[in-house]
Length: 325
Image (cartoon, rainbow, N blue to C red; front, side, top):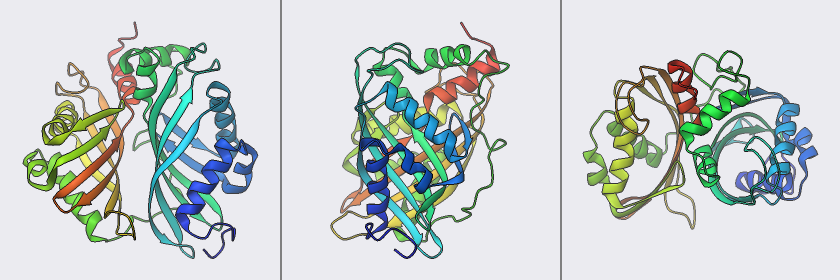
C-alpha cells in the first residue's frame, strides 16, 4: 500500500476504514484528508466538484439520518498503489429518518437501502468517484413513489427551468482516472452476460444463472430465481428498447475465501420509447447510470446486485413531458 497510511494494510481495508471513520465515527472533517480538493463526484442526480461540497452534503445527510450505518458488503477492486486503484464498494445502509431535510419533515421511519460507489484512490486520497444510491428505495419507504418524488424534487429545486438536471454523458467531467478496470475472466464473463441481455437475448439468464440465483435490484427489490431476474432486466430494457448500452468499467476478481466476483459500471443512453419499468413511453431522452456486481458459483451466476436511480430517470421524463402535478 505504497503512498497510503500504514494503518491500512489492504485496499479494501482502506475503503472500509475511511467510510467507517467519516460516517459512523462522525469524522466528516477527515474528508479534507481523504478526498482531493478538486474531487469529481458523479451520481445520477448531478456532478459535484470539490470536497467542500461533499462535506456539506455529508453533514446534511447525517443531520437527517443521524444513526446511519454503512455496512460494507464487498469491495471489488483493480489497479496498484503506484498507478492508482479503483474500488467498487457495495454498501447496505440502515438509517432512521430522524431529522428534517430533503425528504421532508422527520418521520421516524427506519430505512434500509444499498449504495455502490466506484472510487479512484492514489496517495491516500480519493480523487474521482461514481456513486449510485438506491433513492427509489428510500422514497418508497418514506411513503412516496419514485415518480411522485421526482415531481416534488423539481418543485423543491425551483421548478423545471432552474432545478438540478440529472447526470448525462453531456454533463460529464473528465477526471484523473482514465482506466477501464482489468481483464480478469470473471469480469469478462459478466460483461458477456450483460451485453447479451441488453442485446435482447434474455435466454442467457436461463443458460448462465444458477437456478437458485438471487438478484438485488433498485427500490430494494429482491428477485428469487431466474423468472424474477428475467422480469427485472426485461422491464428495464423494454422502457428503452433502442438505447445504447455501454460498459464503462469492468473488474473481475477471484480472492481467497470469496466467490469469483465482478463489478461493471454501465449506462443506457437513448429515448424512453417503450412500455416497461417506467410506464407509458414519453419520448424523453434518458441517461441511465448503472453499476452491477455479480458472484459466481459452481452452477453459474448465483448473486447479482444492480443499482440505478429511479428518481433521476423519472425526473428526466417529467422535465421532458412537463407533467409536474
